[in-house]
Amino acid sequence: MEIAEKLIKTHSLTRKEALELLKYWEDPATAAKLVQAAEEIRRKYYGDKVFTRGLIEFTNYCKNNCYYCGIRCGNSHAARYRLTEEEILDCCKSGYDLGFRTFVLQGGEDPFYTDEKVAGLVKKIKASYPDCAVTLSIGEKTKEAYRLFRQAGADRYLLRHETANEKHYGKLHPPAMSLKVRKQCLYDLKELGYQVGAGFMVGSPGQTMECLAEDLVFLQELRPEMVGIGPFIPHHDTEFAGEPAGSVKLTLFLLSVIRILLPQVLLPATTALGTMDQKGREKGLAAGANVVMPNLSPVKNRKQYDLYDNKICTGEEAAECRECLGRRVASAGYRLVSERGDFAGAKD
Ligand code: SAM
Image (spheres, rainbow, N blue to C red):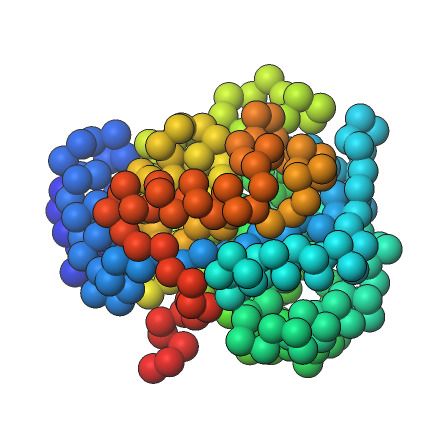
């Protein structure tokens, strides 16, 4: 309990302290203390607001082969699709009409969508919806490409670091990928003035408490504006098909810890959390999350963005998703808002 109090008081943890705190993840008294502190902090900065981001999963082609991911290039069973520019703009239009003021373009690393094409797309979205934020989540690019996207108007970039432990990174990714490059991308994005989102899966194969402690230390070092965490969920066409999924309880514990470590951070209650537990997203909000990301992708392609098994929200139209999440957020005692929802610290 002492260590939880230290975190709440100082908003910081060394690696050793993080490891000590993680010993208590199943202890109800420690979890309750952290949840209470996390709730007070999010109310201080964001009141009862929950921000919403319209997620457009625009391509599942990927040149990478991350071992955990259902759309990795080595999965020959994946039914590939990519949305046309027109389809993406249609998603934005219906999203805008539903009240979304942030669009997140997420996809595999698809060589068809060259840097120039992505920049052109961002420009078009920003020209049509100047009051909206555009977030990209399209993986590792050169600093020049990130600069091009930023000049085109991109505001934010989501790139989970996946794990801050070198050895663990090597277990999850092929030798061609490296943690060093991943981290460099995040620092490049920060330098270019993006609001940056890092993050990791909870319970990915080979993850130890030491890895999680390193994740927490890395987040304090990077100080991202957003942190996306959700349980690892196995996909049947990956080498991790038989591995257990990550724990919802540990994910919730970590959400509270991250809210306390980075008080103003934007913290999504993820679809993976909702997949593992029917009330996962509501529980995530109660633990300190303040963002939800309903899907705006065309229903005909939803099932094909198949990162892990049994992914939820693959059958509903955007309007239904928006309504359903609005109800869920209200039932958890919060208010889904339409505003862009920038990082609170950005205005300081
Ligand atoms: N290609 C981009 C990238 O690598 O950042 C964005 C798309 S990638 C599919 C989005 C996120 O999905 C990854 O950062 C990863 O954490 C998550 N993900 C992939 N496979 C998963 C799985 N089996 N369980 C839970 N999350 C998974």
